[in-house]
Length: 328
Image (cartoon, rainbow, N blue to C red):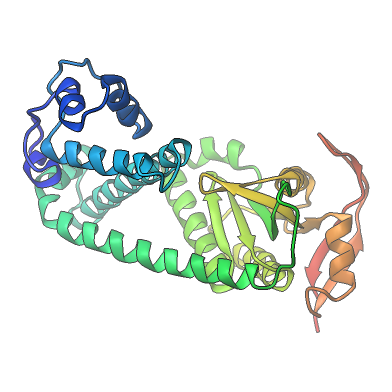
């Protein structure tokens, strides 16, 4: 029995999947599907694993789809999204508190985790309220961006596969894999410093971090001027930090689509390939993006230099350009 069942679950489990199905007037298989979509392992139909709060959560989700407000596929997607993010968020929060206990109390990992287990009760209310606050802020910002974007669009084909025009790119640390063995215990500090620097630089320049991938960051911006500002300021900041490994970057403007909190499309794949062949400390961009920059569509103050053609998997021979901020 978890010491936090009363606080987080509303009490200890007293219900089975069969109980939930009967009281919600649905099938056991529907309860099992709900539980799996949330990211939890299957439970036997007669295993006591659920609380009254679980029943209420299922009823609300089921009503959303039964009412026709959204279809089942969308309902499953919404459920999976919030459950996945909540899983990642909970892990992030607990690990941050463990690291805090290790630093402030000079504890080993095991002792720090025991402290967190003992003291988590004091953080639950704040974490819950701040989650709702940050979600509301992020949703408001997203809806404002969507409103701004669609207000500028004309009529378009409903079959358009890649409806979002975005500037995006990758920045990764060079020789990260080989250096990780040498760095040993300092590796955690390196990754944290890299992530903090990336998130701060991208946000300050007006972009957004799509995801961190260990030794790399995938960023995105709504327009070309913002994207150029993001990639140039990001690489400049990282290059100036002596505690971070040398970096290289890619930058592409193109049409993409977004699913599950991620971004997909040929420009993403192209940017991923370009960063692998970019020189240390440099930004590599594709011919189409370079043409837009040369035409001044991203503003002034940028320079382009031809780069040797490269064979990129899935794209064939590409003749990229080095992108930099001019000295003026």
